[in-house]
Length: 96
Image (cartoon, rainbow, N blue to C red; front, side):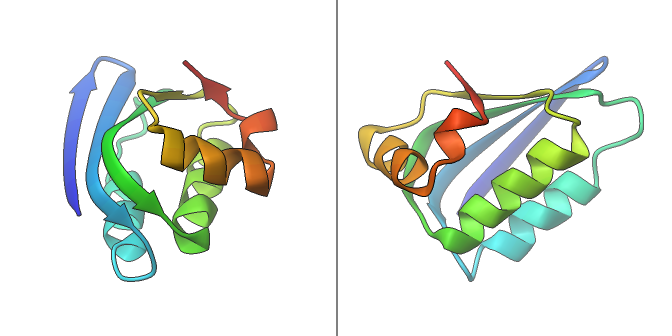
């Protein structure tokens, strides 16, 4: 998985490419931990995310909690949206 991070003031955008699974979830978690205190809103751009496992869902839910709900998911593929819908997290996340 490839992670690109961009911080603009209080908004961080993280773009994910590849697979967010058990092997790559710790890398995503490290990127989240590395966000500074000034970041109060997070945008996840999932245009390049091909696959997400339960470990990836867990990390996204963790990010949602860390941001106190100020998390937006953009450009999720149909496959990723299917997983979000089946797991029920699409009811909580702000998905554009």
